Amino acid sequence: MKPRGLHSLLLGSLCVAFYCLCHADNFLKSGNHEWKKLIMVHHWPATVCKEIENECTEPPDYWTIHGLWPDKAEDCNGSWHFNLDEIKDLLPAMKEYWPDVVHPNRSHFWKHEWEKHGTCAAQLDSLNSEKKYFGTSLHLYEDLDLNSMLQKLGIRPSLNYYQISDIKDALASVYGVIPKVQCLPPKQDEDVQLIAQIELCLTKGLQLRNCSEPEPHPPASSPTLSVCDEGPAFYPPPRRAQVGLPNSRKRPVF
Ligand SMILES: *[C@@H]1O[C@H](CO)[C@@H](O)[C@H](O)[C@H]1NC(C)=O
Ligand SMILES: *[C@@H]1O[C@H](CO)[C@@H](O)[C@H](O)[C@H]1NC(C)=O
Ligand SMILES: *[C@@H]1O[C@H](CO)[C@@H](O)[C@H](O)[C@H]1NC(C)=O
Image (tube, rainbow, N blue to C red; front, top):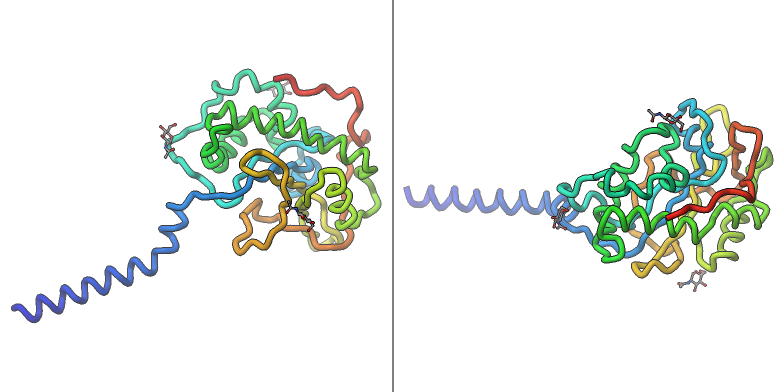
């Protein structure tokens, strides 16, 4: 019957409209891969080991790369799979400066970084292949030279606490931009956060820029890390006795 058919049609349209409304957010999240800045994320291996509660064997005693992350996009191209062969010539540098701290012999960490972040960074011509993405990240790591900067600033792993604001101010004074410092919050039996990550932000032209700006949706990073609370923080020495970076450290070879 006619009226009844019309009625169903109307009801059907309403349902469709309602469905769209409810799922618009998801649609935007999956379809919108725009981003504004890149974040060069360094992490402190001793804290990474602590976070994973894993007995790392000989974690590096220098800051290593976690990743180069576009700020607002992830998993941008599910069909662009990681291929280790493409970065064969970078492997010696990758193993030294971008190791999977917890599983030093695996390449899964690189696959993860590529698929989650690299496929989004690849919107830039300067980063539109695995080789460019990983190679450029290694170059940035070398240029930013965080390990030497921290040493020059006298910020060394220590049994004493640092004030987060002192570390941020010191880094801002050498880089000329505001970094972001992330911490592992204290566990029950501890009273102080651990320094975990130092992030330096870059424009799409790969120039340093401030990390801070009012952000309605802060980028998701490791689930248990958060921006450090102002106040004291512990910069834990690596398990090995030797702290700091020997001056004779090899430079990456590309
Ligand atoms: C996704 O990656 C594949 C494989 O590299 C490529 O052919 C395709 O153009 C990419 N798609 C987009 C939207 O970039
Ligand atoms: C794992 O790494 C260690 C130290 O770098 C090396 O001696 C060993 O041969 C590696 N094992 C494999 C299976 O690659
Ligand atoms: C970075 O932040 C500092 C302090 O808020 C500000 O003075 C400076 O202008 C900012 N730089 C840029 C490029 O926005």
